[in-house]
Amino acid sequence: MSAGRALTRPQKFVLGAAFVPMLATGGAGGAGTFSNIKGAYGSGTALGAVAAGEGATAVLALVLLGLTMLGQAAPLVVRAGLWLLPAAASVMSAMAADGPGPMVIYAVTPMGMCVSAEGMAFLARRIVVHTDGRDAEAEHRAAAVVRALAFHRARAANHPDKRIRKSSERTSWRLARNVGAGDVSLGTRLLDVQRERVTTGADVALADMFAVAVTPERHAVTPSVTPALPPAPETPAPLARPGTEGKVVTVPRDTEDTQVSPQVPGVEKENAAVGVTPVTLDEIAAVAGVPTPRPAEPLSDAQLVVVLRHLRYSADPPLSYRQAVTAFRDAGFVGGEQRIRKAWGALMSQEESTP
Image (cartoon, rainbow, N blue to C red; front, side, top):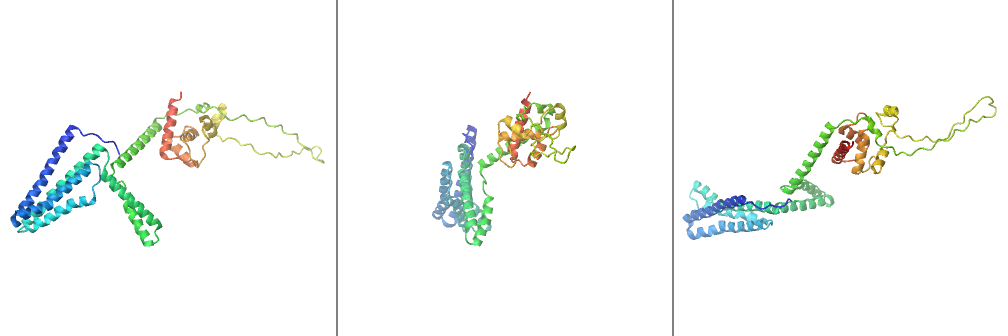
């Protein structure tokens, strides 16, 4: 949750003024209920009705307001009482009316205290969230949802009764829809993640659009670290078999073929013309000081840059970001989209800074 902020002077003035009509509405509702019931049952009964309805509602409203200002969640009985007590006063007032018209007016009058209490509690809650940076009610609901979800997932997986397992499976999916609902901190973090992704994507797209094409001579910049091979042994003279005078029969060699480093496609002719040895992935990794990246294995950030550099210059002209990602996937390398974008951005930065 983000850190809280102090209320400014204009905010204090406006919020303080907002409480005035709320208190006035609650007081007017209580006075109206007293007047309605007094005409039918007398002042004593009316006073008791107002105390049991609006008075008890005002007490619960003060409890709810105090808990909210302390940053604590209100019990369910307090929230329920804020609606049940005014509803009971509405029914009692409606019974004292003489006709349908007054009945509606008498029934609606006690609800002013309910609206006043809920409004003050809601405003106080928002003030606490603004100043303290945390919402106790949202945290309480989120914790309840997570606890219920954990219980139903465990029961759906391990309960011996098949019907109960199926019921808990459905209940857990319904609860999953409410995970994170009303969580301001979660919404802020998701927006931050989305902004970072959009920024990274825009940076990669612009770098891909405005990148300067690299000439093939840049392949000669990276020095080759392949050790020199020892001179090949001299081929023995052909042996002559008996009875083959005047003819030479060559004895076939029983040697293994020497493995040749793969050529970089697209630049073989040019490299052959200028006498440049193609740079392999092993050589680029050795120059970068990282282990040689292997397909289907987790790669570090530095290894991702090495693979993308190798793939980018495996063709002439160099590959774009989308082409390099396609070649990356086709070669069997593993890496998340966001990490690949960051590695590509690092590669583009290195190219721009290279003289």
